[in-house]
Length: 443
Figure 1 (cartoon, rainbow, N blue to C red):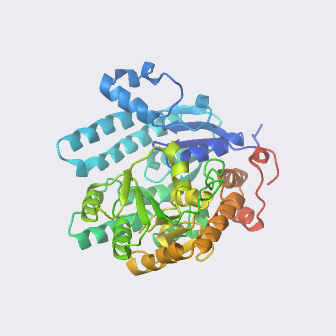
Figure 2 (cartoon, rainbow, N blue to C red):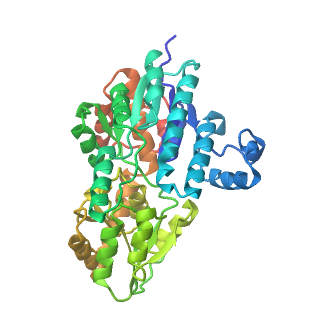
Figure 3 (cartoon, one colour):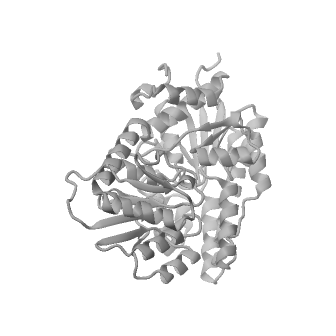
């Protein structure tokens, strides 16, 4: 008897928003397995192979990082770990950095390709699976195997790959340095896209990049990310203090546009105001932090548990990215009631002038004007922040994301157009509580 529901394998060696993809499919009862490189499935990973074979010092560090690879809604019994590629290539990367070859840290991408081959081998031994959901750069062999056994394929593209490469090369030339080295070939990515039945994009920015580089628009389903509106909330009693705190949460590098923000802030020199940077710098980021020392407060990388309080402590949020997918921190900021200043390239759900401002990328003067507006018009800033909170709560929570993902996979399984199905739900505004997404409910 033909099963009336899809059964999906999700494969990804990293984190990104994949945990929410998994949680959504599991909640709808259509997840077969989540293939992960490393995932916190119990409280004693040191007793499991391969963790127990690590040297003691490395084991403690690895397990500390592993604790962040977890989602409370995911059933550990549905997680299948493929950890060796991650551990081996992380060790290689650490060794290269230790001997002064940190520019080759991207060699970890080779571990992702190894993971892809092992995931493909595992997939061919499964029964009852109908669909595979994998991520760009890690899906080639998995999709080839899926095709051989007649499975449908969904390629998740969280970022604008070609735009990212072009801007890093452009910024590097302008600054007189070598661009970051790449390890995922354009040919591999093109083949993954060709093997996909449907491609998932998080924003109009990524969709435009895909279409410009040969992906048919009819194949691209646009599904924005979300925020946890229970964790990310505005302060209960907003402080009337006059101090203006502009918050930036992202890596400090070429792609995030950090140098344009730092220059804009240096030129403004606003009284009773501070720029707070949260995120780890790469080599270029370190150079920028030295160049603009004394104009900002840098908190470094913070664990996820500290982010809600951080957002509540700020007045406004800024992310002047040059190429993104759809930065999760913009959803967090809006859920926290902050007005945001972003570029179109940040892939946010902001409407210019409503929940914040959209400025041209690499435009210091535009950044300065919008920062000054929020600084001088606190009531406008508060109104924009409240509008952003409403928008996220009404359309862009993780529950909304789960529903869109489930609609896509149901349509793909039923032979309907998944792109049209997602667009139809969005256009109608018919978004339901997560409990109603269980298989069998009519959406």
